[in-house]
Image (cartoon, rainbow, N blue to C red; front, side, top):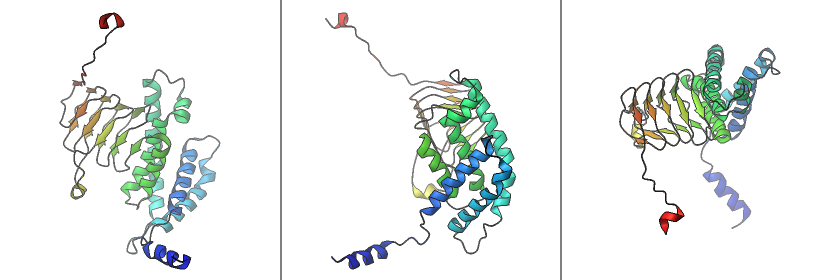
Amino acid sequence: METRAIIDRIKKNKIQPNLRFRLKRETEAFTDLLFLSLFDIETPIEDNMPRLQEKFDQLVDLACWDPDRSCASIWEEYLQTLPGVLEKLNLDARAIAECDPASLSIEEVYLAYPGFYAIAIYRLAHELYKKRFPLVPRLMTEYAHRQTGVDINPGAQIGKSFFIDHATGVVIGQTAVIHDHVKIYQGVTLGALYVAKNLSDTKRHPTIEDNVTIYANATILGGDTVIGANSIIGGNAWLTSSVPPNSKVYHNPEIEIRTQQNDQ
């Protein structure tokens, strides 16, 4: 087949008119600058505000595809949410520093904890998600997912003083609801019991009430599943039904240990 014919066939199958991968790169650049502007003492917010608005305007040009809907006012609305987001993130950082005996300082949490970074990008993306700004919130949390191993859908609702320890492998679905002072460990999944497309407008992911701790590799599924306040979910537990408050749930595998003497 001649080169011209190959090119024509490729062009014929490039069928998504809004698929510009530059949107992904620009979203990541905006996310980096926003994160530094909120936390880094050498990145003054007053100097960066015009740059942030300029980058956001670029995202509007790339992502606001509906001709009947203007996204121009979203920046001003989003800007109003940032002080509150920062207050929540400072509470998250404090919760991590106070709960983790391995933490040597609050600065270490901001700089070195992947769980904190994932929570930060989620909270920043969630406010845009509530504005129904197309695709950008999802690209923000996917950027954090790629860097941390934590996959939080921007639609999830997460309360104050949230702690993800070790981070890697955590999955939190779109309709999950997490209340205040919740701690989860690596490998935890808050997922859907069914993944049929016709369930897209229903609550598919669990609710976690106040002061719950969920240990490593636990899986909790279903929109009707509620983990009651002050409960502890042990590692490797698999739950598809609700747990009352003040419960302890453990997975008990059968483990047999033999010494060489016993094997003789």
